Structures are given as C-alpha cells and as structure tokens.
Image (cartoon, rainbow over all chains, first blue to last red; front, side, top):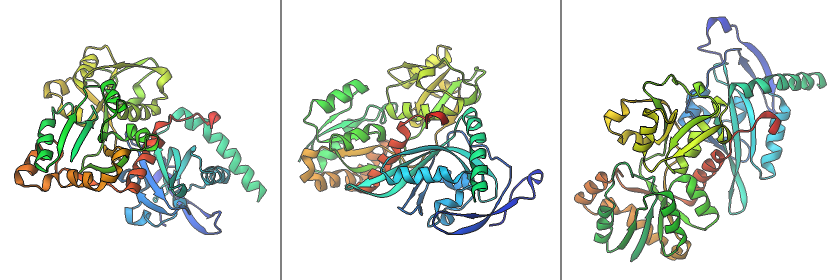
Length: 164
Length: 257
C-alpha cells in the first residue's frame, strides 16, 4: 500500500516487511507523522474469531484512512504499526481466547503511513455460551499515559528484534 | 393484549414527548396500554423492581443488567435514533477544549447513566476520572445548563437530543466542547421474561405502530420517533450490549494493565 497525504517533512516513508502470527507477511510504509485523535470519536469494530473485520463504524473509517469496503473482510492486523511489540498482541489474543476482556494502549498504522494512539478495549462476543467474535472499542487516551508507554514499547521491540 | 410499559426517563424527556399519544395509538391496535414515564432514575428503577411490567424502553447502559442479569429480551429499537452525548462549558468560560479541564472540575448532569458513562470516557484525554471530578446531579438538563452558565459548574453533560431541545437563548450561553460520535448505540425495547411467549405479538405491536394509517405515522413523528421502531435481532442487541459493556470500564494506566 503506497503512502499518501503525508506532509513533506515526514517523507519519505520508511518501509518494513511485517510478519504476523498466522505466518503471513506484507510490506508496510510508515512515517513519524501522528494524526491527532479527534475529540469525541469512539472507534468501534467487530471481528470474527480470526480477527477478520466484520463491522466498522464511521469513526474507524475516518481515522484509519481506509474505506469501509477495504476494512470489511480485512484482517485487523492491517492497523498494526511496526513500533508495536509482538508481545502486546500475544497478550491480547491470549486474554480474549480465555474469554476475558483486554485493555491496552495501541499505536495504530493508518493507510497513508501516519499513526494514531488509542486506548483499546477488546470484548469477546459470547452467544449461547460460545465466543463467536470480538468487539473492539478504541478511544482517545491521555497524552501523559501515551508517554508512559512509548519508552516501554520501544524497549520491548528492541528486545524482540535482538532475539530474532 | 394488555401491556404495562416503562419509559426510561432519559428518553425524550426534554422534548416533552406526549406518551399518552403513544398509548392511544397502541389502543387502536387493540392493546390495552398502561404507560409509565418516570420523572427520574429512582422512580424508573422502582417501577421496574416493583414488578408487573411487560416492556421497558431502556438506554444501552441500563439495558446491560436488565438483559444479562434480569433476563429481559431485547426486540426493537427506535428507528434512526442513535444515542449520543455532548459536553459543554459556558460561552464565557476559558475552557475551550477537553484538555483545558483540571482535577476538581465540577460537572452538572442529570441521572442519565448513558450520558454519564460516555461523558466520563470523553474526559479521559484530560486525565480525569470519577475520583478527580465532582458530579452535581440535576433534575433536568435546563438546571444543568443553569449551573454552568452561573459558574457553579465548569461543564455540563447532556444527551445530544436534550442539548438540541434547550432554548436557543440557553444554547447561546453555552460553548459545546465535544459531542460523542459513536453511531452504534441506541435505546432498546425490552420484553419482560415472563412475557416471552408473547414476544412476537408484542414486537409487532411496536414495529407496526406507524403502519396503521397516515394519521398514526404523523403522530409517531410528533413523538420524536421519526418512523417508529425497528425490529432488533438478539445478536444485534448483544452486539450493542458488548459495545456498551466495553465503555463501562474507565481506562487504566499502563502500570495497572
């Protein structure tokens, strides 16, 4: 996916080949341009058991930079930013597979290579006693809390790359 | 058929909805309706807990416990009416954005739990939570706006429709800071579990309300319900409740996670 709409000072975008737990890989472009999270917006999406997006509200479409048609049917990992440690997502999947709700701070990658921070809540959708999918709600985090997270995530990513 | 219906006090209160008109429309469909429109949360909870009710129109936050703990069955929602809320300071206030707010902030609000929950989530970017703000509960949105205008509260929480229904002269003395943009939440009609066998009939009474005739459709619009009620599947209702549940929990610090 090619970058677009990035201010000149943040170009050229960096590129990296990202690999995912399901064995797939894709090249992503990313920049240091942070898109401010619009006040009042609550992002809502639902996925199936494999993380494939089945619902996206307007806020999700607006902030991700993807069209609704592009999001529905895509894997949620299209939002995954290279600066996010794999262990965060491993914890997410372990938590929701156990039927529990997961909370965390996530740096999301937009289609155009920019990023935005969210506080995410992921709830298992339990129907007739079985988990049939997941609802994810993302909201604007306090800047102070993002600052707490950035250095920790940076250290974790460094450790993960060193361990490869 | 006889139905005792309880309407959440946060629904249409500021618009002065004529619930007797809804009851009259239902009676034209051979439904003997007793309609309760409690003035506040305490009366609403009493009406539900004292029993004998058949249908509740509840906001999605209150509906979580009614459906998942008390066994109420969701079956319809007001058509095209989504629940949103708005936070406002006074027009003369130096507070122009949410992040201008500081600990100790006084919030004027009604006892509408949906508005309170969503409002508190929207204050999180300022690092505020229940422990760092002061809630001042009011009987009406007009009273809440008066507190902000007089400087007795820094901000007020409003249901979006309540804010729109404030007199223009009042709105001119307010400065909206933020309005929620969720789009996926609305009030739900819930059937008491003891009426489960009548669920299909009860759903039809509501969903076909506006289809009686042109006069009924017009009357429905004057209720602020646009075109009445839309049937809701159990799965769609559970999706809404999952979302509402996710919003109940305040954000945690990284150390708390």
